[in-house]
Length: 292
Length: 282
Image 1 (cartoon, each protein chain N blue to C red):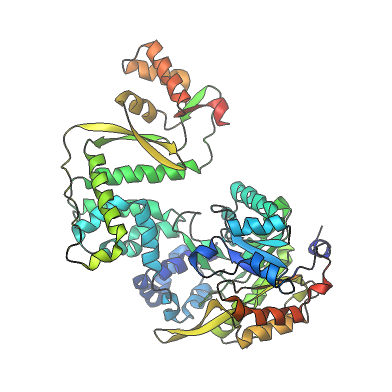
Image 2: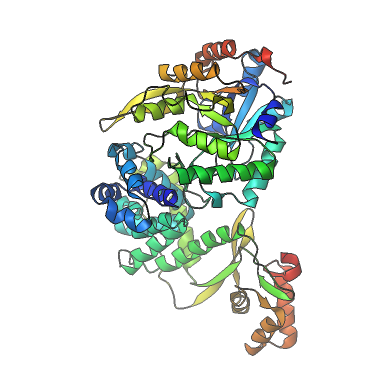
């Protein structure tokens, strides 16, 4: 079954919120169940970010028990390194995704750790933007899709520096075509890339296969400076930057297979994020849904 | 694959500003031997070098993780050098750089770095080698646990994954207890580091001539330790790699055990889950 056959069977999830393992113990954290109970018109699914060494926390398990939709966001596979994909990771990840009835697997595509999966090796790096890297990433994704049965959505990662001759969107267009997979477009991450490379927010989108965009992320960022170097920090603050909205609105109108939008905002006070949830639901209403 | 080699260069640059300088100053010298083509090298250098240093806490966070696995060795090292920079220097060391470039394990490279501190006489405390050896065994055992079991032929036996033993001086446990108590006391009030009446690092007992054997084995989701006899230590030492059980029994008889005692020993090792037979391992 190819991507287009698979995507026809996927439900329209609407707007959701993200969480990471034990996020509530590290910072202010919006309880997705509380938000869903009090504002059911705003939040329709939960994206669970975790890894095979930590598994599912209480928050994730409580959400799964409601049978509301979820997606599984991995934090521990280097899609750019074929050797990182081992049988243990695959079976553990598949089991976790099944335990929460996830619709698909997704996550930042690049490196989540350097070297082997080891304590202290954690770090999030974007891929090297060249053809050999795109080839390797596509093979890893293809293998996960075939062996797990799940649709895999690589996500464009954030970084203050990118290496390689290709534009980020050109790179991922090559990956998803070869892997025959969908794409998770993080609008805030793309806005960072465009700014770092001196592009306008929409550069490269005209030629990108937007029919592969299954999910979008939107989040706030902050303009910062380090030793005089200006950059955008992906802080997940409540207010998305203008460039992020510009990308979001452009893609929303042109992505026929878009099924889900995640507003990454869980570490803010609910009162600060509700207006954005309302706006997102106006843009992308759940009513189009055939999901539960 | 040039992108992999380049990724590892990027990781090394993120950790080591001196290495960054070297890459920007002599890119071809550093990256040509790794097979990274010129266009990729140039795309790396097009980035503003300040972009690599945004995360100013990266080394400290990583050092915290490493010190969590080797707490007593690190505390003992710092008690002698008095400079955090001496451990922080790991991220500029050849051990670190080799480990990253070869897709190795950073904690295991850190062990080599700590061993070198003693070899270079930066640390002279006599308990240090045994304390490091003990923490090293635990670190290796944790990693052995997640490795695939060794393939065994019929009739073969091997040490259970995560099981090992070593000889240590008889005061090493007392020394570790003293250091752990000291670290515990500091952890109760970390701001005590600012005070004149902070606790002093304990004086450790000198290593005596006599030694004992310590067994490491998986227990309670980590690695437990218990003293064992020299016979068990010898037996486990011969079972690092798979061997046929008759060969093992013969070796133990050559060491002075009767055939019956050697058989009983093997049975008890298997019963206590220290050794695994072919059928159990597969």
